[in-house]
Amino acid sequence: MLMFQPLEPLLGAFVREGGNAGIILSTRRPLGMQRFTAAHELGHLALGHDPHADDDRILRRAPWAGDGMGGVPVPTEEREADAFASYFLLPPYLMKEQMAVQGWEPRHFEHPETVYQASLRFGTSYRATVFALEREHVIGRNLGQQLRRAEPRDLKRALLGDFDLKNAQRMDVWHLTERDEGAVIEASRDDLFLLRLKEDSGGGYVWTFDELSDAGFVILRDGREPVPVGRIGAPTVRRVLARAERPIAGQLTVREVRPWAPDDDPQLLTLYCRTATSDEAGLFEPQREELLAAQ
Ligand SMILES: [Zn+2]
Image (tube, rainbow, N blue to C red; front, side, top):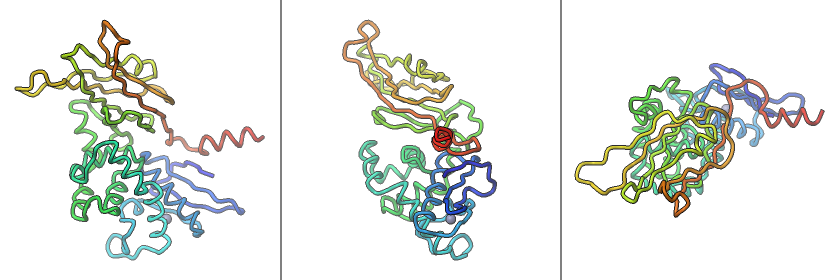
């Protein structure tokens, strides 16, 4: 069973009660951290460990480290659960596939913002992503150390320009481009979506976002990025910032069309979006519904 509780400073716990195993997750962390914690606790379960509670040290230490902060040795069971979580959330094939889809080369991960966007698509925390990239030797230890110094909240703010981001720890900012065609976006309720799409304005094409509004998104900003000097005729970049007003679930297609012939050769960007609520205390919703149905 999976349950959410407003734990603090604990992030999660693996419990056994009367022969039943369960995981408790804190509601007070963003989705990526909750997923890493859940995977760590699942590791305790899968590996037959004793009941146990975890604080945020599980996020700060490398999954392969023999000692934690300040030279204190990490117990074997913790190291095993960390390693389980790292491979479970970010198996090598998933990393390779996503790198191919996005056109990311190892050198792109020198930029913390790329690592942050990768972490959203991997569904894990920023730091867990840095550790996994090191684990697979996509990046070296020195770069890993450098990347860990960057703060995701600064990366989020840098994407938004003059838009005032409140509660930067809780929400994520998805930077979406044509590369995300067909992507599954599992986002928190308050996440922001920055769409940056090439627009063939010379050919008369414009992106339309009616479907975004129909699907329950509110458009917070809509504009075009200035074309660099001397690059007349280059495609412009349409820049739209949106947020879901209500929970969303399903396919979403935005279209780039010529307004006078909207059905003639449109460019499409299709995303599969789902809101994941994880900040309400109680049983994991599908399990709660199953229990209620069984009564
Ligand atoms: Zn643990």
